[in-house]
Length: 256
Image 1 (cartoon, rainbow, N blue to C red):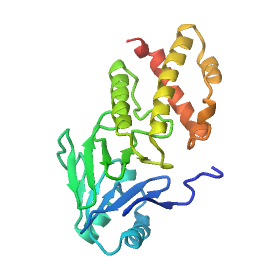
Image 2: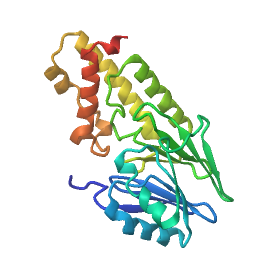
Image 3: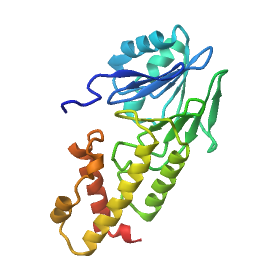
């Protein structure tokens, strides 16, 4: 799309010794003193040289000791093997490692990084990565610039899990929020998504109950004006979210 902020990857300095590679697929890395910690590992294996050069240019000649995957979908793990081959890095995700509910802590002289399980809204493996000293929160695909992260029907159980998960994310009060894909954002976007989600549930539920057809609902439930600038939101993400809510309403699960 024209003017897409992810057309050209950008290295975003997020803090002292902390960097984000912002693109369609995001990743980050930080200086942990005598080693580097990486979060997520992109989608495209041919980007290995570019990524390794960016890490060396920003932090210097230090080994990557850990690679933390927010989850193990292919677009977050493609370079895992490259980090193992080059540095002998330990790959940590909920498929390869048991991470206790309270999380795993990586301690360095200047910062702490926590890997915290938060499963169920996108995959069973979801984790967030929280750097409290920097105020930086990696949320993987739990936040998708307007997307409902689950592809399933919005049962009462799933709606409750979504609300609880977002409440936990918002409570971090992060200075920067790093989604799995697209522009870096802030806690305000998480808050706005919850408002949007609740609005969709109520609005679509009422329209279905009133006997409106799918076409009438799709035509009348348009993207909120203040969200038009959200990444790819008008292009397809609002339509995707609306279709999930509508399908669930037609199945009657919004009434349980």
